[in-house]
Amino acid sequence: REEEEEQQEEEEEGVCAFHHISELENLGISHQDCQKLADAGFCTVESIANATGRKLQEVKGISEQKVQKLKEAAAKLVPQGFVTAAMELQRRQDIISLSTGSSALDELLQGGIETGSLTEMFGEFRSGKTQLCHTLCVTCQLPLDQGGGEGKAMYIDTEGCFRPNRLVAIAERYGVNPEQVLENVVFARAHNSEQQMELLKQAAALMSEDRFVLLVVDSATAHFRTDFSGRGELSERQQYLAQFLRQLQRLADDYGLAVVLTNQVVANPDGMSFAKDNTKPIGGNIIAHASHTRLRLKKARGETRICEVYDSPSIAESQCTFALGEQGVEDAKE
Image 1 (tube, helix red, strand yellow):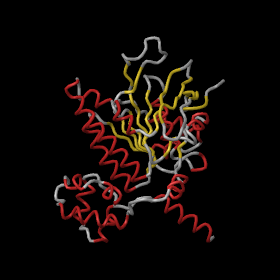
Image 2: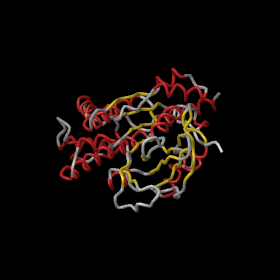
Image 3: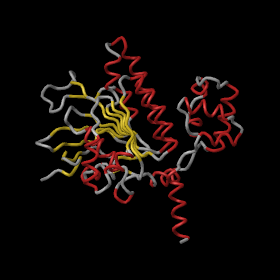
Image 4: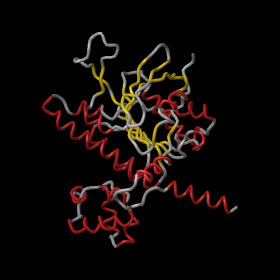
């Protein structure tokens, strides 16, 4: 019985890996100020500790003196500074990975999609990006021993490709209650890049109240591509895109969730005309530096697709095949 209670306590600790903004009230910060910060998207003490003073001063009613006080209070709850490589290794061993639905793909990614980091998937249309996102929305809810994260999923759709009926089919494959699966996925449609940025504030508020392990943005770049056009607006577009990606990274850090973003491709005029795949992901260096793991998805014969590790700090460049079936992403049939 005692062992069970200890295990339950450990699980609860694991579930709440962040400090809610309201905890600052015990350290002398007024309720009104906490509310103002939460409305501006700062829903955790971690987000206060990691934000710049200038960013916090942009919140209406937060003065320079208050920023100083906030930083001091946050430092008491969120220790920052150097740690040994051994401690960092220990922390990284506790990171969970979400199954993709294909054992070959999971093996390629050393367990699946990693939480706490940004994973970018790019490829031309029909390469399986959206199908993979739908599959992850179900697998993230599975128990840890089945490759899940025991948490909810959030889906920001910019292209109108979200289909709840796909989730029902994938849920049936894993033998879980489809109604429960649909209840555990929250969805929002973004119609422009400003709305896309605004949704991240709402996302932070929801994440501070419940356990989310996955945030999907499909696609992250579509609106930036159309809202800003021509070379004259290129630098402004990249600036807004960088802010959006920085915000995603902050959510991944604060809540320990896996952020999966899909990206479109563009024909590469510099590429050799005889090259097999002369497309490149859009967003340039900004998105290349922001993403931890970049996966290129390519079409193959029939329903088979190829996933290639394009860039990753821990996985060597390699590739594998998987298939798209009625019930989501699965292993390729020989």
